[in-house]
Amino acid sequence: MDAEAIRKRLLSRSFVLFPEDMSLDRCAKTALNLLSESEQGCKPALATLEKEIDLVLIEYRKSKRARQQHDREVQEYQKLSDDVATKVNENVRDIEILRKQLKEERTMRQRKEECEEVAKSVHQVQSRSQTQKEITKLSDELSELNRIRKETEEEFVLRKKQFQLLMHSISSLKEEMKQDQA
Image (cartoon, rainbow, N blue to C red):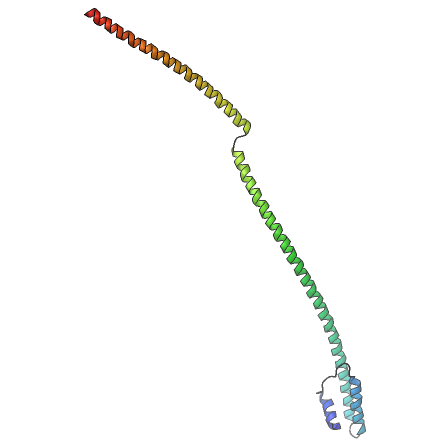
């Protein structure tokens, strides 16, 4: 390549930055050697080239620091991402545990409500001692009623016999009256 073409290329910054394994300093020295061969009228170009090389070096160092900072940020974001994933997994486990607890609590609540309904129906029924007292009272009343029934039946039988006797006596008296009248 021609020295003038190299100089134009370096001045226009249209070249690509070299990878880390190639030294930017070495490339710049090579360019300076090419330019120093024809020093005539190249002193201002040389000064500009040196400034450009310094700027390129500064930009390179800036980009290197920025890349290192970006790498650190990526690591931090990866760590944050891992932390978030861990928390999400913990929360999923917690949700599963809470779902199980909720299911158990619902079952317990349903059983409690059933027990309350049974207790309510039990409380509506009288106690055993009170029921026993009522049974005893009703048995006494029944015994009394049976006694009264017996007495009433006996009285009824007696009255029936008395009525039959009365009817028989009336019938006999009628017969006698008919015989006395006849």
